[in-house]
Amino acid sequence: MTAPRHSNHKAMLAEVLDPRGKAVADVGCGDGAMVRHLTREGATAVGLEPSPEQLARARAAEPAGGETYREGRGEALPFEDGSLDAVLYFNSFHHLPLDAMPPALAEAARVLRPAGLVIAVEPLAEGAYFAVLKPVEDETAVRAAAYEALREPPAGLVPELETVYLNTVKFRDFAQFIDSVVAADRSRRERLPAVEAEMRRLFEAGARIEDGKTAFDQPMRMMVLRKPA
Image (cartoon, rainbow, N blue to C red; front, side, top):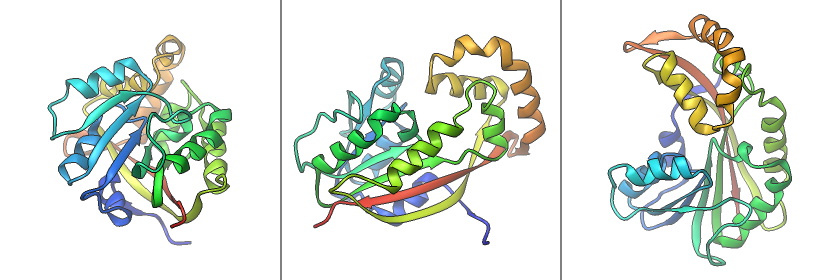
């Protein structure tokens, strides 16, 4: 079996989507980094985010152009029928409630134009980076459920591509890693005191030093679904 290649989210996205002139929504956009990237690449990009804290971070960042941000969820997209060329889920689809995953894909099909794409990039439940996260939240089951939902999408979407790659994530130190963990889900803050020492041990044991930072290779799976033309 061939080992996954090293790449990054932006390079992988460029292989399946030319954003120039496209209307694109990034669902679960977090701090808006991908929205700003898409804007710089010529897209009309909007970030959708359910967390008020993350939404505030996205709106506070220096704009890349005409990008916008809206509060909302994947299972109730605030867009007109057939108004988008692509719906993105970068490291966010598995954060949907389990019963919201099929409706979210049905919503994506609704808002896409003919031949439009759903692009979902999801972390695999394996590797040193996952091991560090696991004590505060074991996402094995939800990541598996997300994969199954994407493999068997509702009517209106056809699976087109599935590929695995290694994305390198880097942190200045353990504190920055913890900040990223909590930013993704504020409820983790309450669970941290009981597991933080073990997470620190795993962080120091499983990482490597690269460019003066602590680095992990995170296995990611990109899945592309297309709305028929």
